[in-house]
Image (tube, rainbow, N blue to C red; front, side, top):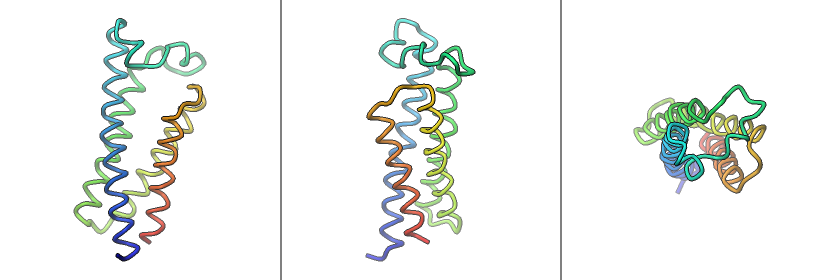
Length: 132
């Protein structure tokens, strides 16, 4: 198996995992912000948002689902279709994930999920470099 083929398969897996979980997480945050009875189950405590520009998880949930999930879904489609720009799309997705986690860690205390998604973002960046 060539390095580019290995990188492509790795990116197919990572971009799809991030896309699906970002959509699910975004929906959970939006639902949790709209229904206070579900907030403890579907979203972190609102106190974590103190010092941030947000009063609830509604906007972060939309951003998570639409931006992070959408960019990763677009990257997945381009990688899957072997579009000429698939390495660029995958690089954008990798940096999108890393930026999301960096910003999130400024407000939300450390959790295993942050480490997991940071590792996925780094893996995506590494796979892009391998593909190039």
